[in-house]
Length: 89
Image (cartoon, rainbow, N blue to C red; front, side, top):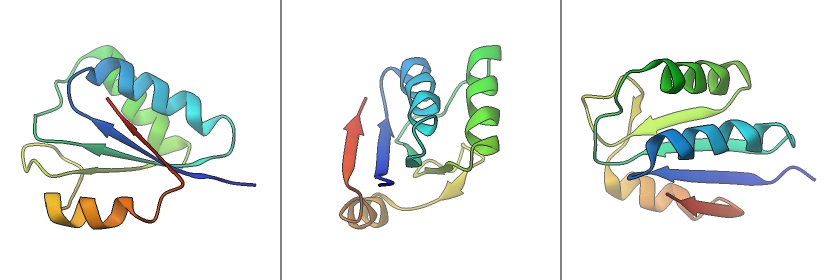
């Protein structure tokens, strides 16, 4: 059974994205929410973001500095109610 998994990315951005990639390997429907801060650009983060895209994961952010689909904090809070698992980082 496919589980809907949401990952909230705040403090440990590298680790949260790496772990999100791992979650896609079990055929989970993964969504990543980059919260509040701008996601830095480096080789590891860029690779994780590209891999998440290749694996069909969706990436959202409430910070307009990030290039991902934008959602307000309120919209994200409402969306989280539809997930089986929410993992905060």
